[in-house]
Image 1 (cartoon, rainbow, N blue to C red):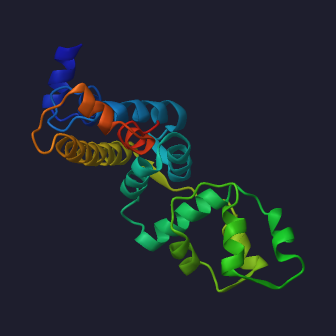
Image 2 (cartoon, rainbow, N blue to C red):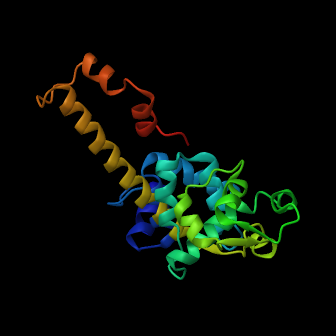
Length: 222
């Protein structure tokens, strides 16, 4: 089996290249193990008959299964090239907000024709996790929100698909960057704990992992 896979890889067969990166064989840029598990889950749950993935499904899955620090890297990497940053930002926001439904708008507007954006925003985000700064969202919202414009953020988004190779490369890029950041952070903590002597002992390990923030950064949930 491996011999056959090797031959296909040497002939640049696209699926063989993807398999080799997944299994960390032959390829000089393999997929990090933790990203491989995530890719396998996405493959089983969301892969379409055309070997692509719906962007809205990927966004919501990342929110549900990845820590925010890593998730932000993934969301940035899966942005389709044909979408501008502003278009993707709006799609990202609408994908999350569409989970709310429109029923709450009647209570928010309470008979008023408009509602200030600063008042509307907390209602829009209630019960949702959205990794976009409030200031950025407010720049998208109208200063005085109408019911009609508010519904735009709650409607279902159009189907946009990501290729399998696009998703694969996005995960590889994101987790490689995560690993580099985590190692850099860990190195700084080790050097600080050893006064620059670069000696790792049980005491040093205990100090490095002494609080929840550091454990969360280094062992973010999947």
